[in-house]
Image 1 (cartoon, rainbow, N blue to C red):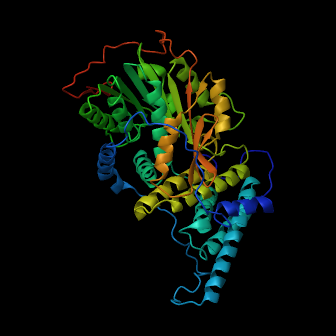
Image 2 (cartoon, helix red, strand yellow):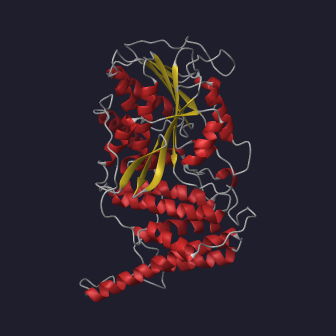
Length: 517
C-alpha cells in the first residue's frame, strides 16, 4: 500500500474555523431540520415499460450469491462504544433516571460529540503537517470521548468511523478487500438504501430510449458485479412494441480469486431470464483487475449494433492527483468515443474527495459521509446484519480516502460539474434524462423513506440526495456521430462469426467466456 505518514502535498492548510465546524455539526445531526418532506417536481410522464416481476430474478441472483459468499466474510465494524478503562458510559445501571439526569446525560453526550468533531479536524490538520505524535495523542483522546457517546447513530457513529480511519493511517497498513468481500458488501448496500437502485434504473431508462428502433443492441457494463442492473432492462426490451431486439451484454469484472468463473455464472442467470421472456441474448465476460486494462478489441463491437456503455461508480477509480496528466480515465474515454456508442451512462458520487490537500479531502468526506449515514438511519428498518454490512461498505470508502495515497487511493470522487467538463472535453455531448428516468427515481424513494430522500433535475442530469444534499448523480452522454457504423479498424472487431443464436439451448465456450441463446 501507499505511504501512511504525512500527506505528500506541499500546500499548507489550517484546521476548520468555527462556522465550518458548525456546518459539519449540522450535517451530522445537530440542529438538522427534518420537518416536512423534500419537494419534488411532478411532471406529466409515462413509463414506457412495466418494471414489475424482475424482483424474483434479482432475489434469485442474490440468494445464490449469498449461499456461496456471505459465510466467508471476515470484517470488523467498529463496536458500539470504544472500550476504555479511564471512562465508562454514563449511569449504565440506572433503570429509571430522572428528567434532570436525562437532560444532563444528553448535554454531556452532546458536548462530547462537539469535542469529537473539533478533535477530528485538528487531528487531520496535524496529519497534513506531518505532526504524527500530536495526531496520535488526539486519536487517544478521541477513544476516551467515544466511550461517552452512542456510536450506533448520529455523531458518535460518524466520529467513530473517521477516528478509526485516522488510527489506521497512523498505525497500520490498509488492506484492500477481497473481490468476494467487496461483492458481499455491495449487495448489502444495494439492499439497504436507494442509491444503487437509483443508479441502475436511471441508467436503464436512458439505455432503453437510446436503443429505440434498433434490432441489435450491445451493453458494455464496466462493473457487472452480480448483474443486478440487467433483469429490468431485459424485461423492458421483451415488452418493446414490435418485439425485442437481439441483446448482447459484455460484463467487465475482476478475475475470481477462487478459480470460479463468476462472470460466466452471472451470464448464465441472465441468459435464463432472457430465454424465459423470449429475448435473443448473448453474454461475454471480460476479466480485468483494472478498467484501464480493458482494450476495445476485447469487447467485440460489431457493425450495425447500437452500443451502450454503462459506468456505475467506476470512472472515479481512474482519476489521479489533480494536475497529473495523462490520467487512466483519459485513455478509457478516448476508446469509448472511438467505438461511437449511442449512449454512455455515468453514475458517480456527488462529492469532491480528490482535492489536492489532505485536510480538504478529510473535511469534504466528513460532510459527505455524515449525510450518507444519516440517510441510512432515516431509511425504513432493515435487517440488522444487512444495515451493519451496508455501513461497512461505506467505512471501506472512508478508509481509502483517509488512509491511502498515490495509486492506492481509488475513491477519488468528483462532483458532476467536473465530470461534465471532463466528458465534454473527451468529445461527448450530454443527453437530457427524460421524464421516465425522473419518475423511476421518484418511485424508488417511496420504498425507503416517507421523507428525507429527494431527486432533482440539474441541467438534464438527475441527482439523489438527503435533505437537499445531493449524494449521487446520474448523467447520459453520446458521441455526436454515433449513428455512423464503427470503422473496421484495429480498435473494433467487426465479426458475427460467434453470434450463433439458438433459442432452445444456452451454450458457452471456455475460451471466450461467451454465452449465446
